[in-house]
Length: 619
Ligand code: ARG
Image (cartoon, rainbow, N blue to C red; front, side, top):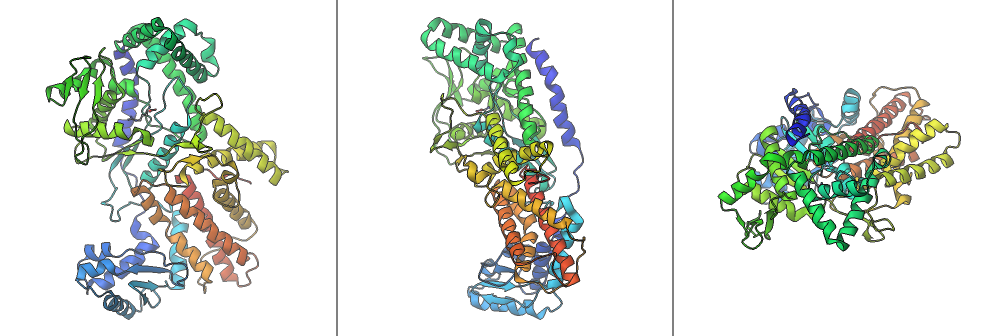
């Protein structure tokens, strides 16, 4: 096999992306249909006569939850409205707004009241019930999705390239790549739920570079077929580690390693063959783990595809021609000096091509960015990688802008995240190597199994296995997504598998519990009732779900969704502590409650699905 052939073989993946891009946009629930937006629209329309134009008023009003001690459903500040109409005295303004709103008695609202600069109001009980529960009943699994048009400039019709996971071949997946995989998957799901036309899920494989030449040589020295049959990724990694250790002692080995690396880069057929074999085995191994996580990619085209082979020098030459890069007179390497980054600050000097002509992570990245932008025209190009690569991406994007590869119509962004810690230090095994994702999944599932066994001794073995997998995997995913991604994470198994709070298990348990409550009552319909305060709170909370999904999407912050789901589960649990659905005397009220808790379950499940977490059948 030569490089041409390798590229041809992989073109099928390119076509898969192209086909995805050509698929017509699927229709999504419109934001306008959702309770919160209907209420807001009413308010905007009532105020229009008096204040500014539609767009101004619309963007000036943000419905939010009033603080806990205020017994209203919703509130909004008139602060921005003040700017629109040029009214500085907020007291005068808020009273004027309340007066206007209260004249409209046919609205969905009960009379509004001013508290400070806030307009506060309740929704009429029947509207609240019909609208919120009606939305959820009609949309079911799709409740929460939207055409994502609020304020954000709109995502509808847009293409997002989400590059995540980007695992390195010939070694097991470590915790850093775990985070990228989990966060990227949640973001891609969020984009899909909020109106992007196409979301390209790209695992930009780390499959090229000096180390693979060295690995090929190490394999020639110490390797054999058998080590590729079982535990291939670990064996290959050990092989590389061994080479790395021995080359430090033996300069001849180092020399040979470099020679092989160069030969591979130059397209030596035999080495390519072996490398392609490692690559295939690696993807096979990765896919098994990704399946457990429920993660699927549109393409695995990696550094080798975009950044190596015949085109590899083109961009470097261009940089030289444009005077952006120079040949270092001492070493012969190509370097970029004095390039200005985003804020006009000078970036540290970096190398674009090694002295022996081989490519670098950065030059391959530049080529990959160029090709993808040209082929797929994404509106968003997001790369999910740890914080430690921040400088790399500042350099990459600055260079791409300077060359005109990256233009204003694409928003390219490094989506970073913190590290994984154990006892306050970077997590590693006793031998000092990085902890592997597979091992963590195993550990989590085992722990989930023993908890389940205790809680539910009569579960059959098959059920136990299935549910422990869902709970154990969910615990790992949620541990990553429950707090802002910039923060470091650690593995506190107690909390991760606590059924009572702060975990996926808690949310899963709430959904399962509602399921078993529902089994014992007759299915209800929506009836008008006088609501208890806790019921109002629950319904209002349910109405916020689509908005939270949008916020999590536009802010690249899946944890906003986690926080919301925990709050919803808490509200449900308080409700359930106060009120027995089954024993509700009033027939209509009972039916409403049944419908309501069933809606809570739907929303928890929909939210977890976006985070890529499943719900077990039994817990
Ligand atoms: N494989 C790389 C690593 O493990 C991450 C790739 C991130 N994406 C990129 N376009 N550089 O460090």
